Length: 233
Image 1 (cartoon, helix red, strand yellow):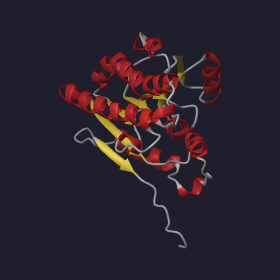
Image 2 (tube, rainbow, N blue to C red; image 1 turned 90 degrees about the vertical axis):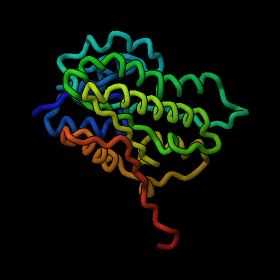
Image 3 (spheres, rainbow, N blue to C red; image 1 turned 90 degrees about the horizontal axis):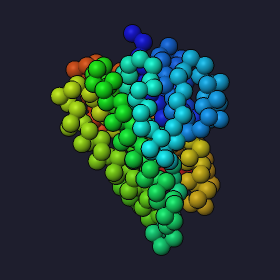
Image 4 (tube, one colour; image 1 turned 180 degrees about the vertical axis):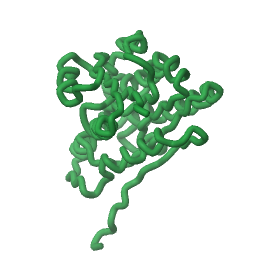
């Protein structure tokens, strides 16, 4: 049976790989793009998809989006995210607000918008979080705070929606070979070597496993970590 998935972050990284995987198996996609230009690009890549324009950095643009989706919704896949590293002493308010908006507030608003469809289908919500949502390191305060908050939101949503049959899962990938990870390495002043990190396909495998589970089971939380060879091996 064909499924319909709402996906954020389909323009690059894990989100792009996930959208390709779902489209290739014949599923229907509803993609959220931050601008009309971005929407045009996504429409060119995924010609069968419905593309809706809403800027996650401005969560108010998501109000009413649920009414625009063509048909039902089987899964809501929150993949989009932004990161700006800085020690607290140099943390810019704009960077803090953007990370909280994109990584936490926008997913909350989008969940609210699509709950009627998800309840009707006994659907699944997947939050692609981060290992930073489990443990915070120096210079990661804003990003980790947004991801810790997303973890709490997912836990609360899961408890609220269990009686409606909506399953809620959080995937915590550690460092993954994506453009975002390349940016993080640049901010950290480190050389980026994609071969040392998880591939996007591995994370997508995990997400697809979660959404394809039979209806009698759920995976509330799953962590995906790279196997980094020891030096000299």
